[in-house]
Image 1: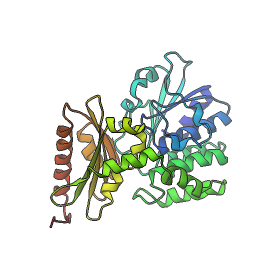
Image 2: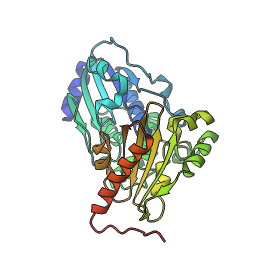
Image 3: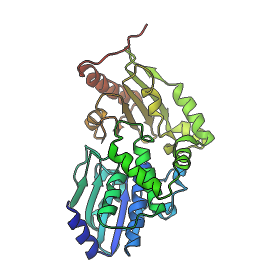
Image 4: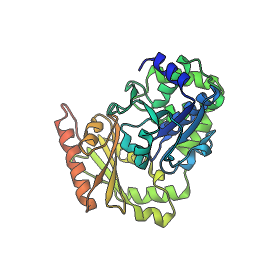
Length: 330
């Protein structure tokens, strides 16, 4: 989609609806809030939607309380911007109603994106959807104030792991530098989204680490939790964000996996990798993501069946990878 088309769409439409995916991360939330604020400054009537709960660690972001969790059945026709979603299924129960609200503009950076929009702005070279939103704001001469910059910085910092993941590029650092010049405080953001945890999160991590297992070559590490454990601590599902990295970060491990078993007989799977394309593995189970970070949901009557299928798929991908060095068990 060309910038001129975005410009014309905005000129022809007063009502703007912005949506992002269930179980939202910092990129999803930050991108939605930044784009919404920029469009409001342009005089548009904007509403932002996200199925499910916004993690409490993002409560400091300006405008976060205005995010709605249910898309109304009847709204004035407008433009629907769907951000950071590989496919429409990630909008959960909102999908059908969203399709009736107007032309869909799909803005994303995932290589596995399904190009589901009437217009698609998909750039898998971008470190985060927030990086694409920054570019749209600049190209359309829209306001970039401190609050919008804060949201964009959270988006990019979240998806790059505070600029330490392999998707960090010179461009993402250049964008971050511009945002810092707008008055963004990187130490505050780091503390809020990477360093502070509720006590319940620490208890969950303790229990998850107690389940840690490795394959016979110590190349794959996995952990798991059941939804019942969350209830015991009064914890929320979003508190498990980042747990998958503990397995991946073990020396010698190539792929870390985290399994979350729900009472609906579903297993939500998170993958993190050092060298293997886990986006392709997740796609085998109807999921998607990036080569180094991906996820999927598997329906299985037994938790162990889902785990065995996933671990076997990772082994097949891992052992086919040319030149892979593994660490043997003693």
